[in-house]
Length: 107
Image (cartoon, rainbow, N blue to C red):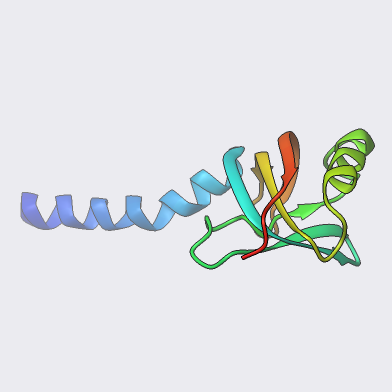
């Protein structure tokens, strides 16, 4: 195999593995969307063109109950909300830290 073909093959493998590696690490994000209630707690129904994991779940299994209270104090279910913090996956993503939360203006 030529050096160029080998380099291309290794680059392709690295690109395929990148999302899995990134997903295992905490992801800092800031997201705006409508707060909804789910069987797993709460979740943002993110605005169009939001970051990939803005629909992460907000559950007391992964973040403190105080953080959830802060979110619910700032935003009611059905309202637009802006949440910033850390989320973690892979697969299904959950918020693990809430840095800030505020009501977002209607679109």
